[in-house]
Length: 247
Image (cartoon, rainbow, N blue to C red; front, side, top):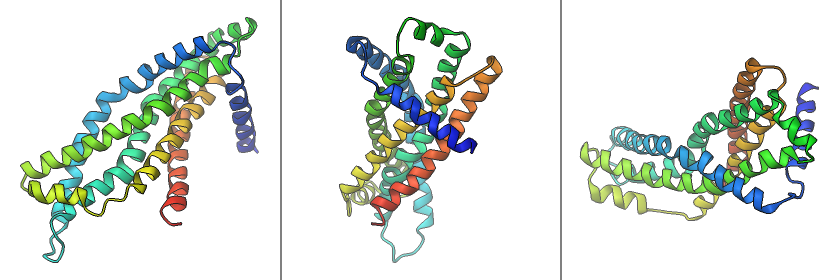
């Protein structure tokens, strides 16, 4: 029953979040601020992880293909499919759930225990909409760009490390990343990213907004936000894979 209680309270919070904003200019300024706070600040870790993971996938794929019947361009093909379908949209979003989700939960949780949210309510401001909607809008807008950068850098990292290590030649790798390309898979990947962006921000904001107690509870809310966001990302990744890939 506790699960249904949280689900109901979560959707009640979303109803308040998407209520008509009172002043659009204020919301726009907050969205621009959150794009920088949530998205641009996450670029360094995305760059580092994507480049190295692309190289690791390429080298492991090359050493796994030891049959003369399998062409070496399969290394580039495997790297592209792994990064485009699963690593960038899912694994990177799991990493963002840890970075962005914990930040959102702790920020809103700290505002709750210091009674800043209560002060907003007293002034007649829709605190849920003012605090949470710009974060959701910013994440849904900027996450696809971050994941596109991750895909590019992952494939580039695979090329650089694969060629420099001798795992494959430049021609074989480039031919492999071009072979049998299906643009519809990008639609699948970015649909997942949009869903994950909404999950990370809304679930994290829910735990932060409903924090009660002191600093210890803020830490617990931050941990819960990361855990539940990660579980929901994996669950919806499975659901969307069934809908798009196995239809």
